[in-house]
Image (cartoon, rainbow, N blue to C red):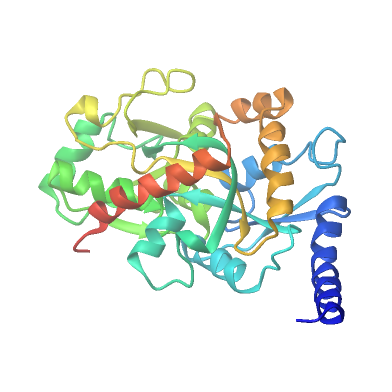
Length: 323
């Protein structure tokens, strides 16, 4: 290669590199869209609006974050759209729900997998709980299980969709308690699933602790058990875990929520987000509003989230095996 060719190659390389560097240096210089795969009013939508409310402040991104809802099929509609159409420029992010998107990827029939996304940060953890309407004859999880054993396939239970945390918890309960439940997946996410319980359209539900906390405070529902390793000391100290009642259900269904970017987003942009977003989640005003809504704050950085995703894959494969 002669000197002239070398100079031209270097110039071409510099021209290709310049836009990425310029984007990263100025990023973000306009509002950032955040796609939520569930409808307005549910736990994911509510929490996403809380954790992004300070993004426009100079200590964080200096630009507002705008929530865009794309609900349907337990999150599949939104995440399929995100992996197919979202530009990888840092201006379109998405909320992830674990184990939802990973369970759907393991089960198949979607256009994404664990490697389709770049984790940014996690803001919280939301266990699944077993709920019934305020006038339900069930006052304990033991009464719930006894009825299910005596009436196989007749106890109707709502949830946010197929292969979401609610569904995972139900599958674990069926196996651990040797019962057969009639699962009714909602097309409208957790909010619609909760409404079905309150209206008496189903006999019970598996829902998020945060949604159930608000419903319980309003007097609309009773919470029978938590699908986690420990009780929620802060929000539901009197509600037992399923394990406490002899039903061997662990924390696989706990709903972790955070932000992710499309694969291919420039590393320089990822670096900005990985620095600023966890700080935003740790903002005291954000934590205060999350706790007011019954949501446990659990902030994790990018590397911790990737480890959590990887660890969850094996557990979900075991739960879903043979279905």
